[in-house]
Length: 255
Image (tube, rainbow, N blue to C red):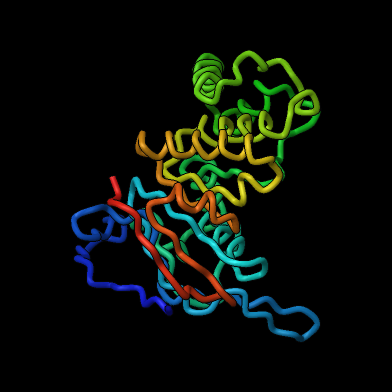
């Protein structure tokens, strides 16, 4: 069944810094007519076509679909790692197209947390140092950095491994460290790109249980996955096919 995204929402117009409202809930992300075209050797590849999507604060959204359908491209645009060819994107009430490179980098560092399938930990840094690094870039003072790092490592049950290198950890442990690194900056939204893709089923479920817990505590999560077992953790599932939203399912209510 082809799904049509409903815009029967109450939008409060005004300053660009004012967040639109969706049925009384603050809108965190709003995409309107997003298209992404890649040009390679004079060949056009349409990765995304006319995407309309809205995410409210506290929501857990799963973006699902087969390989090559545009899931990771969509997540990259949401996280300001890429820009659309056409369409509008508002993040927390701000028009993304109006942001300069410095402001986009600041938002990525302070407001968005990333979790990648390949973990992306730095091999010659300890667990503690990997989690601490984004806070150093942000200019957080040493005492506060230490407190934040230890708090997040405790939350993912990895504080006992703080001095270990990534090579001394299992895949599941590395992903939990990656989650801690994303959380240390206290982001408004957590973007997870196939966070269980390199894990066995046991470790995959451990990571998913951690994401569910974080969402219950109020973290907004957008997760890309092709595994139907893990989409059920989300409150809403958006299905992509050939760069278009073709189905949408909601489970329960957004907190």
